[in-house]
Length: 411
Image (cartoon, one colour):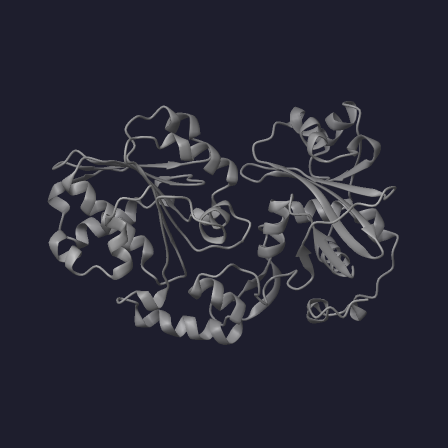
């Protein structure tokens, strides 16, 4: 079976069997990249002892991993007799190879102490944080060890996009983009879905099926309203500060911004998951200049945290929340002539790229329902601007379209 696999390899798959420190496979849906990687790792593990760590940024259970995919491919390749598949691991009885599965963000310490990892496969690597990459990369340190990443890039500021696609490649890298047209087994049933999306939302089609960053979809709430750019901050500007508290896997997010000539400038962000309540104030103060000289406007869902921050000597007030406040806040942000985000705010840039309206799965129509995701910095921004919004009466029906903004027609 494995000899047949090697005979049927496409040109890009042949690179998976050559020695490279980094193997970066990116592209759109239907490309078969995850299946190809699974087949390659299974084949390699059969003939030589390997310890393969299959990870992703967050893994709440084994169901979130590639465990089931590997099991399916082992059975499809006729190799079931050579592998023992348990609930948490896959072991090769023939060579002694092992496949183990972990979430990277919360298991860094255990991975550091794990000896003998020969391969790290990061699936859905577009969600990988810069911090996780910085910590996890040097832990894969066996001689000739390799790091494999499969993903559909979302944002040009993501760490793997910047490292392997946008900039000059690190040495010893195999980077390949694969899409549905590169998959000889692309299922016919997916072609109709692809064509419908192509007609409904060409930007989303290019992201989902062509593996391009999500930049021009009509579903994006702030499409055409913002740009990422360096800027000088004039002296004496009044600064606005907002704070959105994290819950469970959601990060705490702080924002610093100012307004000049009806242009909204986002200058700094402070974002961290798992931030302890008593550490919140000091954390954001280090990352948001001038914080102690201004009032922070914060999510009113955590009165105990607001009280603690106030006792630590900070001026902080809870915002009023209710029906329609999210929509009103979004429209107020859109009312500025421009929104300029400093490149030192990568999470804010990511959210402005991904914050979207829900797309109906059957029809492909864009609804007016806001997806509750990729919005922590944006929520903090809404809170920061709440008092300003209440003091300014806006006729939202007269707002200019994002197309005019993109064409440079704002004065």
